[in-house]
Image (cartoon, rainbow, N blue to C red):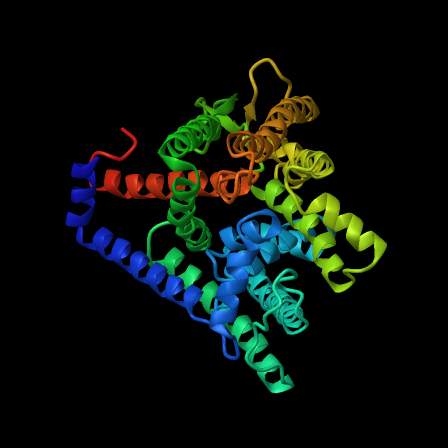
Length: 434
């Protein structure tokens, strides 16, 4: 492994890409700890310590790498861009114009990317306004009496909103720079960086509060979860496809065999992100009407991740979104038509409608297993660490090894390693995964 890393750094262009990526990540982390103008840093730190790492605060602290709760310049991180990308994918089914752009190839994809950028800035403006408004009204940290803003004038609030919105634009630009000139997918690596940045502190807090025995047990459970996720994420259902021979001019084409790889987790981490976002919206709305009856009910039932009602809604939302997302990203009819156009068929299945029904049948069975797998990954670590650490509900460690965070860490890690491996193989080097 170390020898392969050494070979990667001996390759000039690959070494340049890796160092460029690390430099962008360093800039990103610097902006994640730099407070926005008008923030009382000492008061924010005190409120963050009181908020702890449980519930929604632990999740916010995890996915922003601590930036959101510190009201930093990059407080929103890459979340607005991810949300915008998901919305554009969903609108592909609703708006024919976006569907037509998607089929136009590179030029159409460039236009969709531009729409995503505009929507990202709009969402960042909305989210930054919400965060600053809650901070100004003293509701961003409900249990903290200190004023987190050094000044609550309209000018200061406007500057904070513009700074956080501009920070999201810079983060989006940094992610695109990594994709174009670095190694891996830039947006994925940035959110990966935010999650990993919280890991050392959470490890150390577990050791200090519970001792080395519980620390070792928690690490062992976490490693088992990671190993199982790697196994499932690499699993595929390969549908065989045979292409008939056909004569084009004087040349013979076809006659080859291939397969359609269908991953068990076809939807990736998107359903978990969707479910988490939807469950957070009612809690966010309750912050503006904290004394109302419905707001108190939401805070009692949806603040703690171990509440039975929260678990039930979370499970159902993940399963539902998994089927919904797969249905809009994988169209058996399009696959069947393309296969028929080029003379391909599944052995034993007629081309055309029969192939479409067969692919839909296989996809539904795989999606059923994948949806249950996603829900279990999201819930079982949380419940397991709640048993290991019953006094504090698992602290922040059940967030770190919860569904979204661990899927992102494992998925992005595998994707980046595979991309470096492919570049090494182009230069006749042995890859990482061998």
